[in-house]
Image (cartoon, rainbow, N blue to C red; front, top):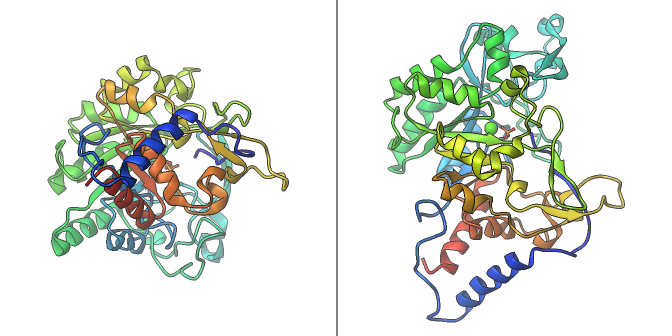
Length: 397
Ligand code: G3P
Ligand code: CA
């Protein structure tokens, strides 16, 4: 979701952000002036590093290998998207369309299952998880979803079930003595419910079986669709719940988040005829509503620190053509409402970094850590951890 955006030179880096950054850096550089006050997170603890789809910057996403690599790199949490197979098994894929993240197109035995359908209002051509049994999905190999990332593992790793990822997290936690949490997302829940393959009750049963149905268990459950979260809460899910908040792009002149299908509103709102956009969730009233059923928000990062600029000379929209602007009040507003904030998604590639970060991904993490976020979804957990170490050092820890 949430495409990258924007724009041009260094006109308007939010001066307040810069000012507060300078103060922190200044304090850091002078011995004896560092502070040990609690961090500006909701609970005063260090922000979480959440490995988005595993260590997806290095290994084909949402595979056991990607999750294992993330754990080896030291991630606090591994994130996974859940979709359903034809026989109702929850597997970890970002999209029901298997063409995006597997080698299904290279399997002649499945050629006849290629079709064009609507997924959450978007026309897609491909092969869809709901047309494949788990046994058939076991025949596929995962591939990189990003041409800029390593391709040498394409086809080598299988699509795991959610249960296998739970088992991995538990096994690695036991082996290392370091608890690794998981962060499952019900992906396209209305789509699967309409096909007679609802995910929520299965997810709750698996969480109960894992012994993790509590607020203190090492699990966070997320969705873009409020109805999915509200349903699970009503059915006795007691874990931490996170409302995801999407956007499509950024108005390069103003830095305002823009909206377009399918990143304009939750699809259950679309189905109900509710025309509001995701941005209503970022208002104090929207946050108060979220607090009635969730514990945190997972907003696209541009709702917190956006960018301004102009389309680059190559005619493409790159973050590197834009410059960061002053942080919004969203983190403070969410904290005031009692909600933690885990923005997505942080990536190392220089074209995905605003120009003022000067190609240094750690500078982006530092800006968000200083803004008080409670965690970050990242494709490169090692970089997020290095930046967190710098942040903790500068705050006297
Ligand atoms: O779940 C957080 C983040 O992953 C949301 O974006 O599209 O990558 O699932 P997406
Ligand atoms: Ca996700």
